[in-house]
Length: 387
Image 1 (tube, one colour):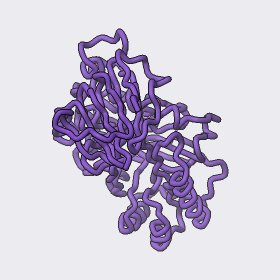
Image 2 (image 1 turned 135 degrees about the vertical axis):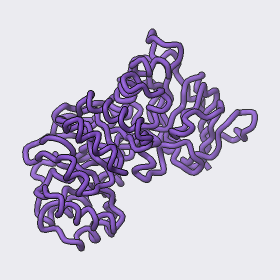
Image 3 (image 1 turned 30 degrees about the vertical axis):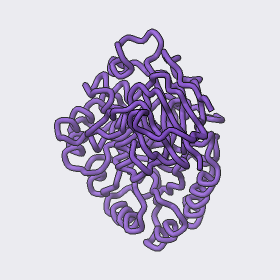
Image 4 (image 1 turned 90 degrees about the horizontal axis):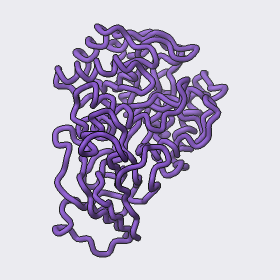
């Protein structure tokens, strides 16, 4: 039995919008799953195989990037960059979700080829986890000529995602709606491109098509890169039960509009975060942290709730067993503290002022993966792995 004990935690962020801060100074995970948390005096901390002294910093569920475009391993030809996933881990992100492997050179667009690539992508990230990061990949872009059996074949092979609707040849709502329905029938979750064209071959997807298609996630509702007009964004927030995905590579003003509208509608639980990288804007290892700080500062969202956009909300919308402090969930955490010399009396207050925190450690499946981040500003305090 592998037992992780994290002591001397300053505060525990739960990932739960309705109760974002848990009481306690200690957390225990067994065999990579969360087992218990609370005050050390009330917990069984004996027999730890790994012990971490948090040194008073904040523990939060590992962050989740809801929108990435991986290709193979830890390499992206879009930016000719190696180790981008490892760099993202240093930004506190422990789970990545593919919105389509669209940057694969020579990406097949025939039905046989796209199915084969989707299954292969799902397999290679299942078998190889760069730096321990969980990459949910194998997200085919739908093309004309696909039939219901194709979706069943992919689902039977383990494919659980559909890439951004609109990046392939299917650009009309009626056809897309039918294919999204087939995908949902076989347990596959779907995302739609929202806004103006992003790469050659993509096109405008307006609010009418988003609503007609009915995907599970409104991909980059703030544009990737170009946002829809304000009235269409407000209309989507009012009309849809899907997740409102806000991305780093989008329009920041539209991002704030989305959060303000969602708050007014009582729909903050539908807000999730992604980076939409690697893409033309490059790789953003700190993209999720930057979105949390930006939305907290400009969207008037308490920082402890803004963190939920980057872990718990995404976990619930994406049906993951990570991103929440919940018994039996994956022991995936980021330990952070206020950046040195950053304004604010606490880490949360500093983030709400728009500052990035310093990441001191990441843990995935109960295993310490990184210690002091090479990418964030240095924190005031750093946790220490004792054993």
